[in-house]
Length: 404
Image (tube, rainbow, N blue to C red; front, side, top):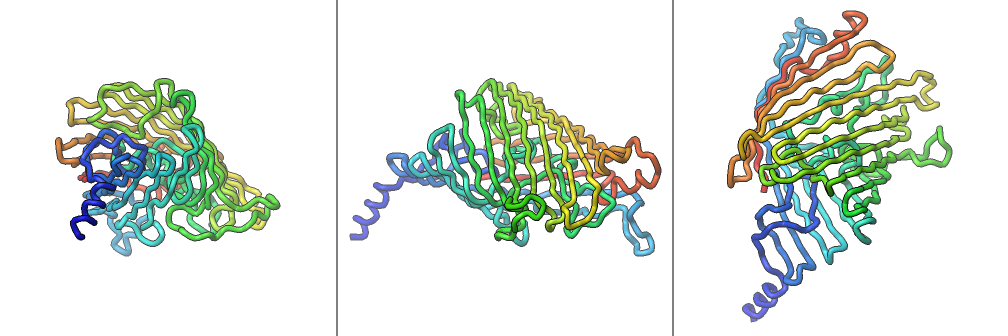
C-alpha cells in the first residue's frame, strides 16, 4: 500500500534539476537559464521553485565632524563592522501558465519588513495580467533590478537618502525611492515584448507596514489617501532582463527607455502629498552594461498643516559595468542629488567604483565598492555642513553573496 501511494505521488510530481525558463520572476535571484532544484508536474502545469539569497558584508563609514558631538565622544568612524543586508528564503512558481506566485521573508529585517514579498499574478494573456500583494512598486531601474544582480552592493544614495526641508514632519522626511509596498497592479508586455506597462494602486506606507491604515483624502474629496503609480518602457531589441550584469548572459544586446510617475496622497502621516517622476535608460551588449536615470520629487503640504511651502528635489546617476574576464566585472557610478531642494543652492555628488567576482560553479558573488561624498555650489558654509548630515564622506563595502 505504501509503495502504491509513493508511486502515485511520483507519477504526479517529478523532482527536476533543469534550466528554469518558466515565468517565475521573484525580484531576488534570476532563475532564467539557471540549473537548480524544482518540483514540477509531468505535464508542466505546476512548477514550484524554492530559492535563497544570503548577503554578508564588511562595512567602513567615515563621517565629517559636522553633526558629531565630540563632548559625547562621537567618533568619525560609525556604522562600521559586519552586517547581513539580506537573508532571504522564499519560493516561487506557476500553475497552468495562468497564475504565478511568490513569497519570501528577509530574516535580516525587522517588523513588517520581514515579509519582503507575498504576491500572486493572474495572467489573461501576455498583454494583460494582474498582480496582488506585496511587491516592488513600478519606479526606477535601480529598485526594479533583481536584488542579487545589482552592479554595486548598494543602490544610489540619491534614492535612499532622506531629503532636507525646514519643517518637521510627523514622520521621517521621505526619500525619492519607493521600493516595496502592498497593492494591486495591472501590467503586460505587447508588440513582441518591445513595450511594457505597469499601473498600480498601493498603500504608500512602504515595506515596513503590512496592514491597512489609510483614510480618505481631506484635500481631494472622495479620493483614498493611497499611492498611485505607473510606468511605461520601450525595449527595441525585446524584453530587457532585470540584471546589471550576469556572466551567463554575455552574448546579447538589449536596450530600454522608460518613464514613470506616481503620487502618494497624504503621505508621511497625512502631512504631505508627494509626487515623483522618473526617466530610465539601460543598455546591455555582450560584456558591457550602462544605465542612467533622472528623477524628481515634489512635496506639498496638506491643508491641515497650514504650510504654504512646496519643495522640489531631484537626483540622477550614470553607471557602467564591463566584464574584463568571464567572471570579473568592473563597475563605476556617478550619483548626484539636490538634497536641500531647488530653492537652495548646493548639490551633493557621490562617485563610486567597484568590482564583482562571480566564483565559477558556486553561485557565490564577491562585490567590492568604495564611494566618496562631495558637496558643491552651496551659498554658505552652514548650508554645506547641513547638506550631508547623516551621510558618510568615505564609505567602503566588501560583500559576499550566495544565491540558490
